Image (cartoon, helix red, strand yellow):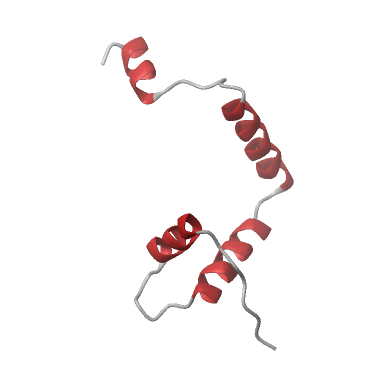
Length: 72
């Protein structure tokens, strides 16, 4: 049984950008994302969670900051 889901215009735009071809359905895109997520190891999931926490807390450097530190 098919169902309808509501997504924000921002998410719809992201899904549209992820299409590999015009006829690709949003369901195919979502399945691809789910499969990719399931393939992550526990260690990778832990690292992603840590990176998200660091980002939210402002513990990161921009590319420009890194370039400046390295003298580029």
